Length: 83
Image 1 (cartoon, rainbow, N blue to C red):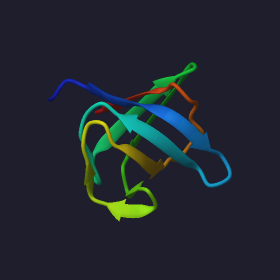
Image 2 (image 1 turned 135 degrees about the horizontal axis):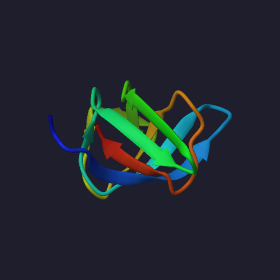
Image 3 (image 1 turned 120 degrees about the vertical axis):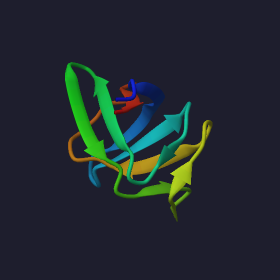
Image 4 (image 1 turned 30 degrees about the vertical axis):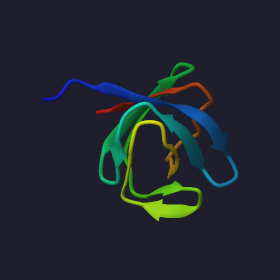
């Protein structure tokens, strides 16, 4: 089993639509399982869809700013890892 790798941070959370904006420090693709941790909470889920500048994308690379739908509220600064 691969070791979890930090691939970014939550830059912003849009609570009205349940979307997290992520600043990536590593690659991410639709279908990847991510773990978002911070502020005493942990959320693990599969990336069902991802957008860059309101355009649907299948994968993103280091340095990209992406938005993903999340199942629970997250906070700015939370760590994002691949599970």
